[in-house]
Amino acid sequence: MPELPEVETIKNELLPHVVGRKITGVDLFWERIVREPSPEIFRARVTGQTINALSRRGKYLFFHLGGGGRLVMHMKMTGSLLVNPADRRFTRAILYLDDGTEVHFWDPRKFGVMWLASDESGVSNKLGPEPLDEDFTTGKLANILKGRAAPVKPVLLDQSLIAGIGNMYADEALFEARLHPLRPAGNLTPAEIRRLHGAIRKVLLKALARKGASVRNYIRPDGSPGTAHDEFSVAHGVGKNCPVCGGPIERIVVRGRGTYFCPRCQPAP
Image 1 (cartoon, rainbow, N blue to C red):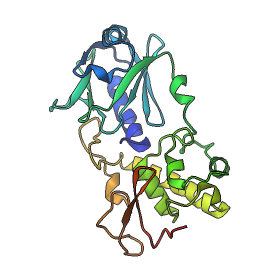
Image 2 (tube, rainbow, N blue to C red; image 1 turned 180 degrees about the vertical axis):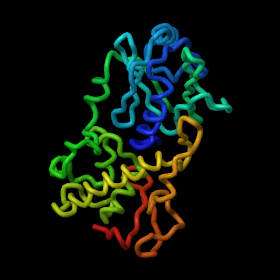
Image 3 (spheres, rainbow, N blue to C red; image 1 turned 90 degrees about the vertical axis):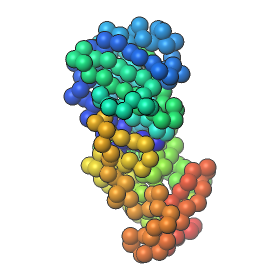
């Protein structure tokens, strides 16, 4: 699933192609991609709108429309937004722009969704803080973890607590902080919370610099892959060895999510 670094990369690389451009038409090849309103009303309300800006919140992308509304997109498991792709096999929708540009919602597994909203509040109000914002401090993270008996891994994945961290970056951050994914979140010491805070920011910034991770289906708007996965330490690492101690990376399931870690560097609680 595209996580914060991937959606931020999509936003940044799509910006020069769409901002200031008018949407002249919409094709929906998989009408269930539109959550609301109906596909017919969606086409009518989007066509003719100018895209004034793009923004991101967590894993959501917002097209700011000239009429004041928002076109909201969530890539879910396998979605990406591509500009003028040569291969249309997995194109589920197309936005046609007034300069001839085509923006394709590309999604092999048809999980991605989009809808129209008056503003971002319906999404933003359900999300926790952005982990790369300046006000995401060690103290704020400590307050999020405080008193929670749940393992730290699913707490990091809870979008209502912290926005944008997904499975692979949670694994990488926990490895960087040398914390076992089953450690109770509320039992971390102040020193461990400081390590985890620094690890979250380091892992996400590193992934952003490499334009996201193309582990499975994610590709950038120009069709090229991100390369963050080339430097993963443990994520998706079964059959590999830990880059620190040389021991085997293991996989367990935590609250239904495949989880990769080094049992030597991240000792069990």
